[in-house]
Amino acid sequence: MTSVSIQPWLTVYHVEHAVTFYMAAFDAQETYRLDSREGSIVQLSVNGAAFWLSSGSNADENISLQANNIRMILIVEDVEDIFNKAIEAGSKMINQLTENHGWIVGRIEDPFGMHWEIGKQTN
Image (cartoon, rainbow, N blue to C red):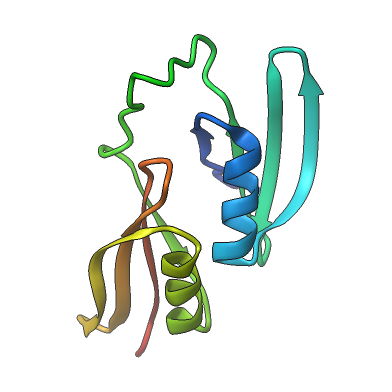
C-alpha cells in the first residue's frame, strides 16, 4: 500500500513572521523552502506532521484572510507546554485547556487568523 498524508497549506501575510511564530509556538522545524521574487513557500514539521506556508498572490495588508472555516488539530504529548508556548508567542486563547470526552484540548487563534486545537487523547 502506498503511503498517504494530508498536509495543510496555509496562506498568510508575511511568511517569515509565520515561520518564526510556528517555530516558537509549536517547536516546528523548517524542512523545505523555495524562495522566489513572488515570496517564499515553506514546509514546517511538528514531530513529523508537516504543513506548508506561503503568501497569497495579491496579498493586501488591509484585507483579512478568512481562516475561520478551517481549524487544525495539533496532537502533541505535552499539551500544556505547547499551548502555553503558543500563547506566549502571540496567540489569542479561544478556549482554555479542558478535559472532556477522552481528550485534553484547548483552542487558540494564531497571529495570522488560523485556529488550532492543541490536545491529545487521554484514554
